[in-house]
Length: 86
Image 1 (cartoon, one colour):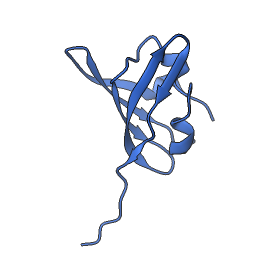
Image 2: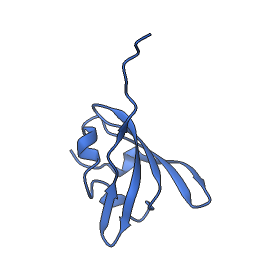
Image 3: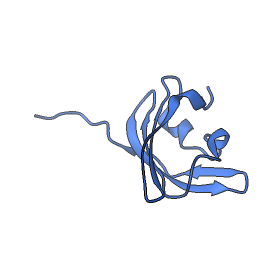
């Protein structure tokens, strides 16, 4: 699939920092973490922004590494989905 701007929501903003939520039931985390997946949102994203990502195969956190000159790059998603051993 592809990035859907309607599924990107700003959760909080303070001192230039933005916390986002993005949900895709169609795309895996590895797809979401590719360069320019979020290109359509370049005007909204800033380096250092953090996203909570709910992908089809995982839930995790990702930081925006670059959002300028026609490129949006995010870090690999830190997977928060884990089994409960208790």
